[in-house]
Length: 484
Image (cartoon, rainbow, N blue to C red; front, top):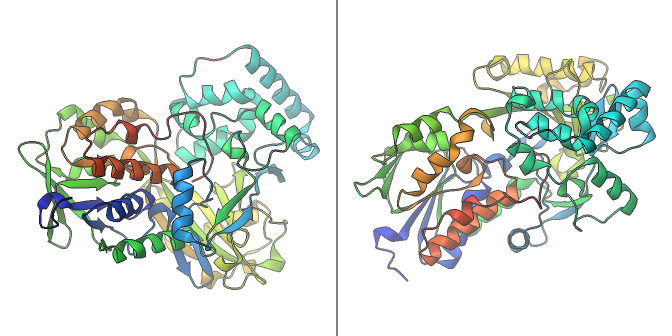
């Protein structure tokens, strides 16, 4: 063990999201270190935080607590204790006015929604995809190989373009490999026939039950932060990292903060987006090529609009956790029903349906820069357009909340294809570890982000400098899930 007076014993974690807090907690719990977590926002949880509003709490992504990683599951239950409640998973697609189960089931409702012509095209396209496989150069190729062109056009093409702002033909197939590689039409059919209980083999996209904290995912991360501080760690909110100082030996020495202070430490665990990380490195030996790759990495931003709607005004039976909106007439991508995550998420669940409308944007575009008032009007009108409510009066306008979330989704295009060059040079910086969704530019779910934090903590505790296990999380085919 080291003395706490040594510079080496101070570990600085950038970001209080799932990856950062997990790493910090594991380090504080298992090692003789002073751990300091720096968070730019006013609360912990990152993309998994829960935001309180007058009408209820907002989960910014819809975070199901389900994992095939036993260590992550143990972590949740060790921290949460009896906090978690078990929930039934239900998500659907709104397609041509029909609510269809997601993943799509081969049912009468599905065939009626597709129509005779659409059903024939879907069946023919799927048969063709089993005979002829396209070279997988893009996400479009990936989807067509697994579902056929007909189903791809109906249920994947427009929604994917809405999420990423570009056509699936311009995106790397790696995104599909991380999210839905083990899902296919044949596995959906097998799942229908076998009716496996949740969590037993098979694609995670087909799970039917999950756990959830009554007050949203932020409840768990607030508990982790509290435990960390009881172990002697610190969580500093409302503070940005302006610079990570690297010495002539290409090793971290300190971090400069937006409040003018500097924290000395030779170990930094980063969860900032790689673009911001590269910009913050002061004195690091990054090549011009690596800097260019970092500067050109792209992200998709996210807007959540919370709308309280009078329960009696809702025209559809909303039993869902979320609904995917396959409708080109609206900007809306997905709709959360917070009541169905937990009644405790809603101030008045008997009379109010507390909705979260998810929009995908890019900083500076029309949606991102729209005023809160205009965004509220747009969201309300789009609920009318898709047939969920009849008129503006059905929404309690005094309860509308809008939250912009920058850099929510790492994009799999452009500089992403050259990411290995940047990773290699970042790994050469002594004492620097980069983890989590943004910190690895990988579309991880919460559990995989946590696992990168655990593995980074393990390496630091064991004195290892090998970053390979951390970068290898979520690169196999046995676990994939849609959503946030």
